[in-house]
Length: 392
Image (cartoon, rainbow, N blue to C red; front, top):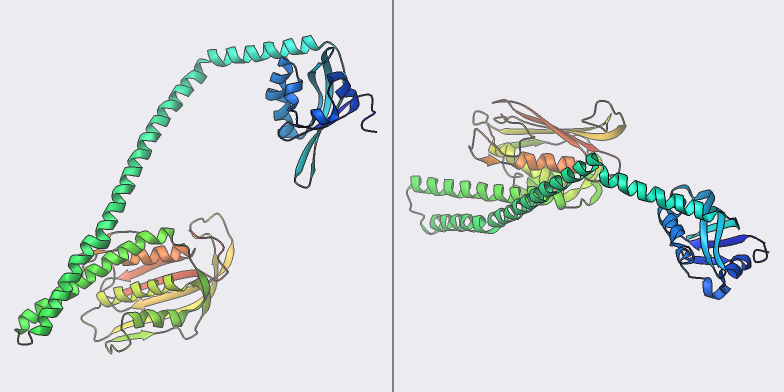
């Protein structure tokens, strides 16, 4: 039935290739059924209709998926064949088929001439449009500036990589040798004066602190590209492993009070252990010499908070674990959002807390600090309880 209808019926793919064509149109064009399949439709059109096809017909199909009374002219064996067509787009599974049907009409030259005239008029208007030309020139200037900025950023990134390479090797190695030689002198010379031993121990301590600070700086840099490995974690186990890493278990001058309830929540075990190592290390470094013992109190509860911490106009409440960490140390006099700051106690760069904040935020949580100098510091940390499907 499709073959014998006295009208033009054909279909094309989404790339414009003929898929089917009925006998009526094939006869007018002088082509066989097997021959025409795979042809580009525009190869069967006149020059004017090719332009119309490229600028109007195909874009309309892509946007609207159907067109009514669209005019095309085919190249027939006996001359031009003007046709008025209706078009529909159909999809079968993953195959897109554009169905076209219509009738032959006359007065084609009027439509083609109007199309060409309109195209010429549009090109002239575009060329003579001073504002558009000005905007184009401005865009080219901005593109040049953007390219220069891109090169500058690329150079800075390369320089940054060189700096971190320097930190990872060239600075770590002399620190390691200094620590080794100081320990060697202490071990091999037991009769050294006490003042010399004290100074050597200070050298070891300062170099060890500096080495650990450089490692923390490297971890801070690398954390951005690390993909978190979420598992169900027990909070007390994380804290105990962190304390064990710092050999705090046997230190009687340090008291750690763990959460009464061992709360379970999802997170990256390695990263959270690093979080508590940095918090505990900072508490050790910032001990108050007026206190007999360093006391660290950690509590945890489950709560419901607004997921959007920084947007007061949006609300989405979710389950969180709220961890409170308090110590009786010297306290802080700087904010967590400062990546590089100096502590009054050591007068050196300290990024450990910035690293902690980054770990928490990578888990889509939040971290805040409150402190009174000489009274200790209190951290409030929030972790989402629900499985995390996205990372920062």
